[in-house]
Image 1: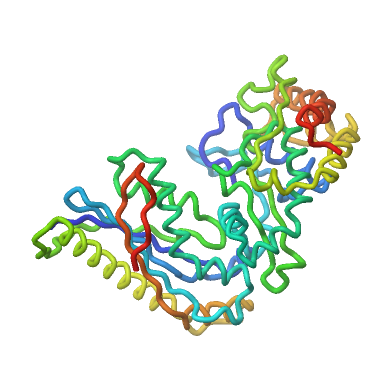
Image 2: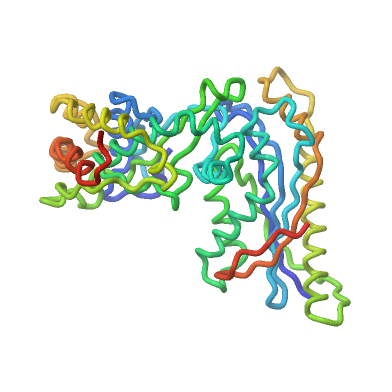
Length: 222
Length: 187
Protein backbone atom coordinates (compact mmCIF):
# COMPACT_ATOMS: atom_id res chain seq x y z
CA UNK A 1 0.00 0.00 0.00
CA UNK A 2 1.23 3.48 -0.79
CA UNK A 3 1.67 6.25 -0.10
CA UNK A 4 1.65 6.34 3.68
CA UNK A 5 2.80 9.91 4.07
CA UNK A 6 0.56 12.75 2.93
CA UNK A 7 0.78 12.97 -0.82
CA UNK A 8 0.06 16.67 -1.42
CA UNK A 9 0.03 17.22 -5.18
CA UNK A 10 1.98 14.23 -6.47
CA UNK A 11 -1.07 11.94 -6.77
CA UNK A 12 1.10 8.90 -6.47
CA UNK A 13 -1.69 6.36 -5.98
CA UNK A 14 -3.42 7.46 -9.18
CA UNK A 15 -0.17 7.19 -11.11
CA UNK A 16 0.39 3.66 -9.82
CA UNK A 17 -3.09 2.65 -10.99
CA UNK A 18 -2.82 4.25 -14.43
CA UNK A 19 0.58 2.67 -15.05
CA UNK A 20 -0.67 -0.73 -13.93
CA UNK A 21 -3.72 -0.62 -16.20
CA UNK A 22 -1.74 0.57 -19.22
CA UNK A 23 0.86 -2.12 -18.55
CA UNK A 24 -1.81 -4.79 -18.41
CA UNK A 25 -3.12 -3.79 -21.83
CA UNK A 26 0.39 -3.87 -23.30
CA UNK A 27 1.61 -7.06 -21.64
CA UNK A 28 4.17 -5.36 -19.42
CA UNK A 29 4.91 -7.06 -16.11
CA UNK A 30 3.55 -4.57 -13.54
CA UNK A 31 1.45 -5.76 -10.57
CA UNK A 32 -2.31 -5.20 -10.58
CA UNK A 33 -3.30 -2.17 -8.52
CA UNK A 34 -6.54 -1.13 -6.87
CA UNK A 35 -7.32 2.22 -5.29
CA UNK A 36 -8.62 2.56 -1.76
CA UNK A 37 -9.85 5.20 0.66
CA UNK A 38 -8.56 4.85 4.19
CA UNK A 39 -11.21 6.24 6.51
CA UNK A 40 -8.90 5.88 9.50
CA UNK A 41 -5.73 7.26 7.90
CA UNK A 42 -5.25 9.93 10.55
CA UNK A 43 -2.17 11.95 9.68
CA UNK A 44 -1.31 9.58 6.85
CA UNK A 45 -2.55 9.65 3.25
CA UNK A 46 -6.17 8.56 2.87
CA UNK A 47 -6.22 7.99 -0.89
CA UNK A 48 -3.90 5.10 -1.57
CA UNK A 49 -3.03 2.35 -4.01
CA UNK A 50 -2.73 -1.32 -3.07
CA UNK A 51 -0.74 -3.59 -5.35
CA UNK A 52 -0.76 -7.36 -5.52
CA UNK A 53 2.20 -9.45 -4.38
CA UNK A 54 2.35 -11.70 -7.41
CA UNK A 55 4.79 -14.44 -6.47
CA UNK A 56 5.61 -16.58 -3.42
CA UNK A 57 9.28 -15.67 -3.78
CA UNK A 58 10.66 -12.33 -4.86
CA UNK A 59 14.26 -11.13 -5.07
CA UNK A 60 15.39 -7.60 -5.76
CA UNK A 61 17.33 -6.52 -8.83
CA UNK A 62 20.41 -6.36 -6.59
CA UNK A 63 20.30 -10.12 -6.08
CA UNK A 64 19.72 -10.70 -9.79
CA UNK A 65 22.53 -8.35 -10.80
CA UNK A 66 25.03 -10.07 -8.51
CA UNK A 67 24.23 -13.48 -9.99
CA UNK A 68 24.45 -12.15 -13.55
CA UNK A 69 27.76 -10.41 -12.92
CA UNK A 70 29.25 -13.57 -11.44
CA UNK A 71 27.71 -15.87 -14.05
CA UNK A 72 26.29 -17.97 -11.25
CA UNK A 73 24.31 -20.99 -12.54
CA UNK A 74 21.03 -19.45 -11.33
CA UNK A 75 21.61 -16.55 -13.72
CA UNK A 76 20.19 -18.80 -16.43
CA UNK A 77 16.74 -18.38 -14.91
CA UNK A 78 17.09 -14.62 -15.17
CA UNK A 79 18.54 -14.64 -18.68
CA UNK A 80 15.59 -16.62 -19.96
CA UNK A 81 13.15 -13.71 -19.73
CA UNK A 82 15.48 -10.74 -19.34
CA UNK A 83 15.83 -9.70 -23.03
CA UNK A 84 12.11 -9.61 -23.72
CA UNK A 85 10.99 -8.08 -20.46
CA UNK A 86 13.74 -5.48 -20.38
CA UNK A 87 12.84 -4.37 -23.90
CA UNK A 88 9.16 -4.04 -23.07
CA UNK A 89 9.76 -2.17 -19.85
CA UNK A 90 12.27 0.21 -21.41
CA UNK A 91 9.78 1.29 -24.08
CA UNK A 92 6.95 1.57 -21.55
CA UNK A 93 9.05 3.52 -19.05
CA UNK A 94 10.16 5.92 -21.75
CA UNK A 95 6.54 6.59 -22.68
CA UNK A 96 5.55 7.22 -19.06
CA UNK A 97 8.64 9.22 -18.13
CA UNK A 98 9.58 6.68 -15.49
CA UNK A 99 12.99 7.45 -13.97
CA UNK A 100 13.09 5.09 -11.01
CA UNK A 101 14.18 1.84 -12.65
CA UNK A 102 17.93 1.90 -12.24
CA UNK A 103 20.70 0.16 -10.34
CA UNK A 104 20.42 2.73 -7.55
CA UNK A 105 16.81 1.65 -6.84
CA UNK A 106 17.23 -2.12 -6.75
CA UNK A 107 13.89 -2.79 -5.07
CA UNK A 108 11.91 -1.29 -7.93
CA UNK A 109 12.67 -4.27 -10.15
CA UNK A 110 12.17 -7.73 -8.73
CA UNK A 111 12.35 -11.27 -10.01
CA UNK A 112 9.37 -13.28 -8.85
CA UNK A 113 8.79 -17.01 -9.09
CA UNK A 114 7.01 -19.99 -7.68
CA UNK A 115 9.64 -22.26 -6.09
CA UNK A 116 7.80 -25.32 -7.40
CA UNK A 117 8.48 -24.22 -10.99
CA UNK A 118 11.16 -21.56 -11.18
CA UNK A 119 11.80 -21.92 -14.91
CA UNK A 120 8.13 -21.90 -15.82
CA UNK A 121 6.99 -19.05 -13.62
CA UNK A 122 9.99 -16.80 -13.12
CA UNK A 123 9.78 -13.30 -14.49
CA UNK A 124 10.75 -9.74 -13.76
CA UNK A 125 8.21 -7.38 -12.25
CA UNK A 126 8.53 -3.62 -12.55
CA UNK A 127 7.38 -1.58 -9.57
CA UNK A 128 6.85 1.98 -8.42
CA UNK A 129 5.40 4.28 -11.02
CA UNK A 130 4.44 6.80 -8.31
CA UNK A 131 6.72 9.47 -9.70
CA UNK A 132 6.15 8.87 -13.40
CA UNK A 133 3.76 10.70 -15.74
CA UNK A 134 4.74 14.23 -14.92
CA UNK A 135 4.58 14.26 -11.16
CA UNK A 136 5.21 17.64 -9.58
CA UNK A 137 5.02 19.48 -12.87
CA UNK A 138 7.54 17.68 -15.05
CA UNK A 139 4.93 17.34 -17.83
CA UNK A 140 3.64 20.89 -17.54
CA UNK A 141 3.57 22.92 -20.74
CA UNK A 142 6.18 21.95 -23.31
CA UNK A 143 8.14 19.91 -20.75
CA UNK A 144 5.94 16.99 -21.74
CA UNK A 145 7.74 16.82 -25.09
CA UNK A 146 11.07 16.12 -23.43
CA UNK A 147 11.11 12.36 -23.89
CA UNK A 148 14.57 10.88 -23.38
CA UNK A 149 15.13 7.11 -23.09
CA UNK A 150 14.15 6.03 -19.58
CA UNK A 151 16.79 5.01 -17.09
CA UNK A 152 17.42 1.28 -17.05
CA UNK A 153 19.97 -0.89 -15.22
CA UNK A 154 23.11 -1.32 -17.30
CA UNK A 155 22.84 -5.11 -17.49
CA UNK A 156 19.24 -4.83 -18.69
CA UNK A 157 20.28 -2.36 -21.36
CA UNK A 158 22.97 -4.77 -22.58
CA UNK A 159 20.66 -7.77 -22.61
CA UNK A 160 17.48 -6.38 -24.11
CA UNK A 161 16.08 -7.69 -27.37
CA UNK A 162 15.97 -4.90 -30.03
CA UNK A 163 13.25 -6.68 -31.98
CA UNK A 164 11.03 -6.81 -28.91
CA UNK A 165 11.78 -3.15 -28.25
CA UNK A 166 10.68 -2.32 -31.78
CA UNK A 167 7.51 -4.37 -31.36
CA UNK A 168 6.72 -2.64 -28.10
CA UNK A 169 7.20 0.82 -29.59
CA UNK A 170 4.66 -0.14 -32.26
CA UNK A 171 2.30 -1.49 -29.59
CA UNK A 172 2.50 1.80 -27.69
CA UNK A 173 1.80 3.73 -30.88
CA UNK A 174 -1.30 1.62 -31.43
CA UNK A 175 -2.85 2.56 -28.09
CA UNK A 176 -5.92 4.60 -29.02
CA UNK A 177 -6.78 7.98 -27.53
CA UNK A 178 -9.96 6.47 -26.16
CA UNK A 179 -8.03 3.70 -24.43
CA UNK A 180 -5.79 6.23 -22.69
CA UNK A 181 -8.74 8.41 -21.70
CA UNK A 182 -10.71 5.43 -20.44
CA UNK A 183 -7.87 4.34 -18.17
CA UNK A 184 -7.17 7.83 -16.86
CA UNK A 185 -10.83 8.76 -16.42
CA UNK A 186 -11.60 5.68 -14.36
CA UNK A 187 -9.57 7.20 -11.52
CA UNK A 188 -11.99 8.80 -9.02
CA UNK A 189 -11.72 12.52 -8.34
CA UNK A 190 -10.68 11.74 -4.78
CA UNK A 191 -7.43 10.34 -6.15
CA UNK A 192 -6.95 12.58 -9.18
CA UNK A 193 -8.40 16.03 -9.78
CA UNK A 194 -9.61 17.05 -13.23
CA UNK A 195 -6.61 19.26 -14.00
CA UNK A 196 -4.10 16.52 -13.25
CA UNK A 197 -6.25 14.01 -15.10
CA UNK A 198 -6.15 16.11 -18.26
CA UNK A 199 -2.42 16.67 -17.89
CA UNK A 200 -1.71 12.95 -17.64
CA UNK A 201 -4.03 11.93 -20.48
CA UNK A 202 -2.74 14.65 -22.80
CA UNK A 203 0.83 13.86 -21.88
CA UNK A 204 0.42 10.17 -22.60
CA UNK A 205 -1.15 10.87 -25.98
CA UNK A 206 1.53 13.36 -27.00
CA UNK A 207 4.44 11.23 -25.84
CA UNK A 208 3.03 8.08 -27.42
CA UNK A 209 4.09 9.58 -30.74
CA UNK A 210 7.55 10.58 -29.52
CA UNK A 211 8.81 7.23 -28.28
CA UNK A 212 9.89 5.95 -31.70
CA UNK A 213 11.93 9.08 -32.42
CA UNK A 214 13.59 8.75 -29.03
CA UNK A 215 14.80 5.23 -29.74
CA UNK A 216 15.57 6.02 -33.37
CA UNK A 217 17.93 8.73 -32.17
CA UNK A 218 19.55 6.25 -29.83
CA UNK A 219 19.98 3.81 -32.73
CA UNK A 220 18.45 0.88 -30.90
CA UNK A 221 15.45 -0.04 -33.03
CA UNK A 222 15.42 -2.78 -35.65
CA UNK B 1 36.05 -0.57 26.71
CA UNK B 2 32.55 0.84 26.36
CA UNK B 3 30.77 -0.53 23.31
CA UNK B 4 27.40 0.26 21.80
CA UNK B 5 25.93 -2.32 19.50
CA UNK B 6 22.66 -2.95 17.73
CA UNK B 7 21.46 -5.80 15.58
CA UNK B 8 19.02 -6.66 12.84
CA UNK B 9 17.38 -10.02 12.32
CA UNK B 10 17.37 -11.05 8.68
CA UNK B 11 14.58 -13.45 7.81
CA UNK B 12 13.39 -15.37 4.80
CA UNK B 13 9.70 -15.57 3.93
CA UNK B 14 8.90 -18.87 2.20
CA UNK B 15 5.68 -17.56 0.63
CA UNK B 16 5.02 -13.86 0.27
CA UNK B 17 1.50 -14.56 -1.02
CA UNK B 18 0.46 -16.51 2.07
CA UNK B 19 -0.76 -14.28 4.91
CA UNK B 20 -0.19 -17.19 7.29
CA UNK B 21 3.42 -17.76 6.24
CA UNK B 22 6.02 -17.41 8.96
CA UNK B 23 9.39 -15.91 8.16
CA UNK B 24 12.42 -17.88 9.20
CA UNK B 25 15.42 -16.08 10.75
CA UNK B 26 18.49 -16.78 8.62
CA UNK B 27 21.03 -14.25 9.87
CA UNK B 28 21.83 -11.67 12.49
CA UNK B 29 23.70 -8.57 11.45
CA UNK B 30 25.24 -6.70 14.35
CA UNK B 31 26.84 -3.27 14.11
CA UNK B 32 28.99 -2.04 16.98
CA UNK B 33 31.03 1.05 17.82
CA UNK B 34 33.69 1.55 20.47
CA UNK B 35 36.33 4.22 20.93
CA UNK B 36 36.36 5.26 17.27
CA UNK B 37 36.22 1.69 16.01
CA UNK B 38 33.20 0.40 14.14
CA UNK B 39 32.54 -3.16 13.10
CA UNK B 40 29.84 -5.22 11.53
CA UNK B 41 29.38 -8.89 12.35
CA UNK B 42 27.10 -11.37 10.67
CA UNK B 43 26.07 -14.78 11.84
CA UNK B 44 24.06 -16.70 9.30
CA UNK B 45 22.34 -20.02 9.61
CA UNK B 46 22.85 -21.45 6.18
CA UNK B 47 21.20 -24.63 4.93
CA UNK B 48 23.68 -27.48 4.81
CA UNK B 49 22.08 -28.82 1.69
CA UNK B 50 20.07 -27.31 -1.11
CA UNK B 51 17.84 -30.39 -1.08
CA UNK B 52 14.24 -29.26 -0.93
CA UNK B 53 15.06 -25.69 -1.81
CA UNK B 54 14.63 -24.24 -5.25
CA UNK B 55 17.95 -23.24 -6.86
CA UNK B 56 17.46 -19.49 -6.53
CA UNK B 57 16.48 -19.60 -2.85
CA UNK B 58 19.41 -21.90 -2.12
CA UNK B 59 21.77 -19.51 -3.88
CA UNK B 60 20.39 -16.49 -2.03
CA UNK B 61 20.59 -18.15 1.38
CA UNK B 62 24.04 -19.61 0.90
CA UNK B 63 25.25 -16.17 -0.10
CA UNK B 64 23.74 -14.25 2.82
CA UNK B 65 26.98 -13.21 4.59
CA UNK B 66 28.49 -11.78 1.41
CA UNK B 67 25.20 -10.23 0.38
CA UNK B 68 24.82 -8.50 3.74
CA UNK B 69 28.36 -7.21 3.64
CA UNK B 70 27.81 -5.70 0.20
CA UNK B 71 24.61 -4.05 1.37
CA UNK B 72 26.31 -2.64 4.48
CA UNK B 73 29.19 -1.30 2.40
CA UNK B 74 26.74 0.34 0.00
CA UNK B 75 24.80 1.85 2.90
CA UNK B 76 28.00 3.22 4.43
CA UNK B 77 28.87 5.00 1.22
CA UNK B 78 25.53 6.81 1.36
CA UNK B 79 25.86 7.96 4.98
CA UNK B 80 27.99 10.64 6.62
CA UNK B 81 30.87 9.30 8.71
CA UNK B 82 29.28 10.42 11.96
CA UNK B 83 25.94 8.74 11.25
CA UNK B 84 24.75 6.66 14.21
CA UNK B 85 24.93 2.90 13.78
CA UNK B 86 21.14 2.70 13.87
CA UNK B 87 21.06 4.52 10.52
CA UNK B 88 22.99 1.66 8.95
CA UNK B 89 20.35 -0.83 10.02
CA UNK B 90 17.43 1.41 9.07
CA UNK B 91 18.86 1.84 5.59
CA UNK B 92 19.46 -1.88 5.34
CA UNK B 93 15.81 -2.39 6.26
CA UNK B 94 14.82 -0.26 3.27
CA UNK B 95 17.08 -2.23 0.94
CA UNK B 96 16.06 -5.73 2.03
CA UNK B 97 12.30 -6.10 1.78
CA UNK B 98 11.49 -9.08 -0.40
CA UNK B 99 11.75 -12.80 0.39
CA UNK B 100 14.95 -11.93 2.21
CA UNK B 101 14.15 -9.04 4.50
CA UNK B 102 14.99 -7.26 7.72
CA UNK B 103 12.41 -8.61 10.14
CA UNK B 104 13.48 -6.81 13.28
CA UNK B 105 15.88 -4.13 14.51
CA UNK B 106 16.72 -4.45 18.16
CA UNK B 107 17.21 -1.61 20.62
CA UNK B 108 20.82 -0.42 20.95
CA UNK B 109 22.78 -1.96 23.82
CA UNK B 110 25.65 -0.36 25.74
CA UNK B 111 28.07 -2.74 27.35
CA UNK B 112 31.51 -2.76 28.92
CA UNK B 113 33.79 -5.17 27.09
CA UNK B 114 36.96 -6.33 28.82
CA UNK B 115 39.83 -5.58 26.46
CA UNK B 116 43.27 -6.79 27.45
CA UNK B 117 45.37 -6.10 24.39
CA UNK B 118 48.49 -3.98 24.50
CA UNK B 119 48.14 -2.50 21.03
CA UNK B 120 45.29 -0.84 19.20
CA UNK B 121 45.24 -3.70 16.71
CA UNK B 122 44.89 -6.25 19.51
CA UNK B 123 42.12 -4.22 21.13
CA UNK B 124 40.31 -3.95 17.80
CA UNK B 125 40.62 -7.69 17.28
CA UNK B 126 39.14 -8.33 20.70
CA UNK B 127 36.22 -5.97 20.13
CA UNK B 128 35.56 -7.54 16.74
CA UNK B 129 35.72 -11.02 18.20
CA UNK B 130 33.35 -10.16 21.01
CA UNK B 131 30.85 -8.55 18.64
CA UNK B 132 30.92 -11.65 16.50
CA UNK B 133 30.22 -13.79 19.56
CA UNK B 134 27.22 -11.61 20.38
CA UNK B 135 25.93 -11.93 16.83
CA UNK B 136 26.32 -15.71 16.97
CA UNK B 137 24.44 -15.85 20.28
CA UNK B 138 21.64 -13.69 18.92
CA UNK B 139 21.33 -15.83 15.81
CA UNK B 140 21.17 -18.92 17.99
CA UNK B 141 18.40 -17.33 20.08
CA UNK B 142 16.45 -16.28 16.99
CA UNK B 143 16.70 -19.78 15.54
CA UNK B 144 15.54 -21.30 18.81
CA UNK B 145 12.54 -18.97 19.00
CA UNK B 146 11.51 -19.83 15.45
CA UNK B 147 11.28 -23.57 16.08
CA UNK B 148 7.95 -24.85 14.81
CA UNK B 149 5.19 -25.27 17.34
CA UNK B 150 2.19 -27.53 17.04
CA UNK B 151 -0.22 -25.84 14.69
CA UNK B 152 -2.92 -26.41 12.14
CA UNK B 153 -2.48 -27.18 8.46
CA UNK B 154 0.12 -25.19 6.62
CA UNK B 155 1.37 -24.76 3.10
CA UNK B 156 4.39 -26.63 1.71
CA UNK B 157 6.76 -23.86 2.76
CA UNK B 158 7.11 -25.59 6.13
CA UNK B 159 9.42 -28.20 4.64
CA UNK B 160 11.76 -25.43 3.62
CA UNK B 161 11.81 -24.17 7.18
CA UNK B 162 12.88 -27.59 8.35
CA UNK B 163 15.74 -27.56 5.87
CA UNK B 164 16.93 -24.18 7.08
CA UNK B 165 16.85 -25.22 10.68
CA UNK B 166 18.96 -28.24 9.87
CA UNK B 167 21.70 -26.10 8.42
CA UNK B 168 25.21 -25.00 9.21
CA UNK B 169 26.28 -21.67 10.69
CA UNK B 170 28.38 -19.17 8.80
CA UNK B 171 29.87 -16.08 10.35
CA UNK B 172 32.04 -13.08 9.56
CA UNK B 173 33.18 -9.77 11.04
CA UNK B 174 34.73 -6.76 9.34
CA UNK B 175 35.70 -3.17 10.17
CA UNK B 176 33.47 -0.37 8.89
CA UNK B 177 35.30 2.43 7.16
CA UNK B 178 32.92 4.75 5.32
CA UNK B 179 34.12 6.04 1.99
CA UNK B 180 37.13 3.72 2.08
CA UNK B 181 37.99 0.76 -0.16
CA UNK B 182 35.68 -2.12 0.53
CA UNK B 183 37.00 -4.44 3.18
CA UNK B 184 37.20 -8.19 3.08
CA UNK B 185 35.19 -10.63 5.12
CA UNK B 186 36.95 -12.26 8.01
CA UNK B 187 35.44 -15.46 9.31
